[in-house]
Length: 145
Image (cartoon, rainbow, N blue to C red; front, side, top):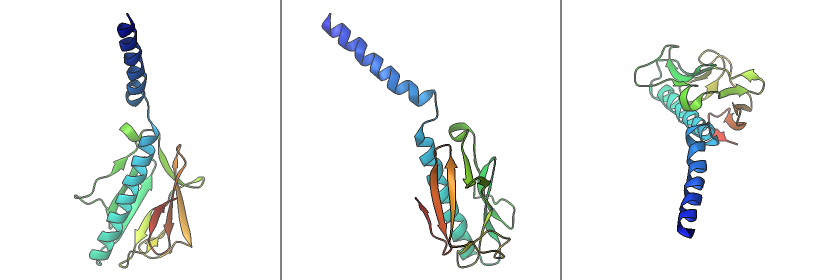
């Protein structure tokens, strides 16, 4: 009888633990999106440094984000969309939508078209609703804060 009760309790604990992974977005998705954003940012930045004849950017909008070359997509890069595991998430600059980030041939970030408007001392982006923050420095370095 004790063994049966123990098995029932263990199955109940496992059910509660596992069901939360399948039936709701967890904080893991927030951190995964942050890491994916940093990776895509660095990819766009490196492409701009290697291919100095094109304008590379990282476009962020309500549907997702992705790297661009001359404001058009390129085949080897994928758009990350705010659906599936990332449903309900967004990236903002404070209360405003996040701007498109352009890169010059040295990897410096700009908020204007390909080198027109350099960012100030830092650009802080927030992943909502988890309130995870990213800081992009004027030198091009990105970090989680």
